[in-house]
Structures are given as structure tokens and as C-alpha cells.
Image (cartoon, rainbow, N blue to C red; front, side):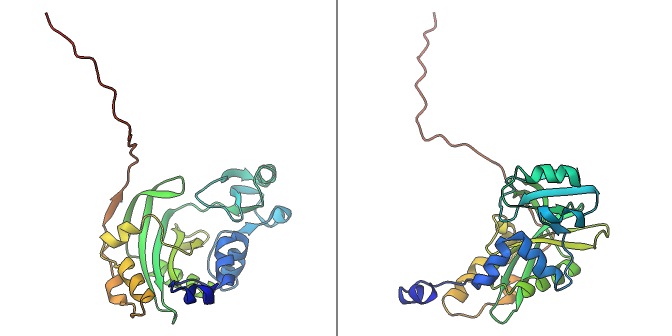
Length: 240
């Protein structure tokens, strides 16, 4: 629809259809990044469970799932096979242990990429509720390599783990072709993500110097319920 959108005056900064399909399908994503030697969890379709270890942490999830919906953890291939019967179009991955992180990224058409790393210290429903920015050169370079491997452009969110070394010091788990909800932390740490996205949409150059950030900036979210209905009036009490 690029031509139709352009004719209507609608500005977009979108990846190719092939890149979008790769980020939406966890099986395709695994194939794309492993072909480039990027560490990522072992991944198998239900018919290929024999390729995974017999015992150890496993995760069963939808190939095209989101927000941690229908994600199940187990310890054996037999358990994984049963869970595959309950999840629509599933895949099975090895479970990675370590410190989970997200990277808020902006990728120019020329491949120049800025990366802001956030530790996901508390996650609920797939969303980071407590997080902190940090610097990690190896994670930054691996995030850039991942985005290059799939042909990403524009705003992206890359997720992964820093580990004690198994299966690698940094492991990439997925890419979302959008800003994550926690990008406010990156902005608070100094990265002008929204401003530079607008620059690109309106034909101005992206200033990657304005996407630098400070480590050690923290974010804490909370859930609040707001009622829009007036409270019932309490009857007045008379005192003797």
C-alpha cells in the first residue's frame, strides 16, 4: 500500500513485508538469526522435538504470539509434546536463564542504528513494570547485528538475556518492529526517540547524537483503576 499511502499524504517508516513476517513468526526469526551466527534459544516445531534436549527448561509458545499469552514452561520433551496440543500453532524453545533486557532502537535506511538498553527487572503480562537503563557493549553490538540480519528499519524493540555464559553471554530472543511500552524510560535517560522518528517522517536527518542515554535511570510502573461514575452520597448523620 506504499503508493496509495504516499498519494494520500500519509508518511510511513515501515520494514519490508519479508522483514515484518520474520519478526512476527518466531520460527522464521530463529532461522534468520541463526543463519548469521547470532545466539538465540534452540527452537523446534512440534514434529522436531527430538532436536531439543530430553530434559531441561523448555518453553512452549505460539509461533506468532504476543504479550506472553499462552506461554507455558516445562522440563521434558514429553511435557512439551502435551502442551503443544493445547497451544495453537506452537513452537518449543529452550528456556534461557539470566537477566532479561529490552533494547529501544532506531535504524536508518543506511543501517546506522542507535541502541538503548533497559534491564527488565519485573515483567507482568509481557510488559516491563520495573526497569533500569544500562550499558553493555557486547549486547549493543549483538542487537545491531540482529537488526541488520533481518533487514530492520525504523523504530524497533529487541529482547534478549545477558547470562552467565550458557548458551552465550548474550542471547537474543525476539524483535518487535515498534517501540515497546517501556520506551519512556529510554526517553527519560536522554534518548530523543520520538523526536528523531518525527525528523525522519518529515524528511529531516536522524541525529543519532541525540539518541545517547545515561545508564542507571530507573522506571517503576503501577496499575491504577479510575472510576468515572460519581460516588453515591452518604446519608448525613445527626448527633444527639
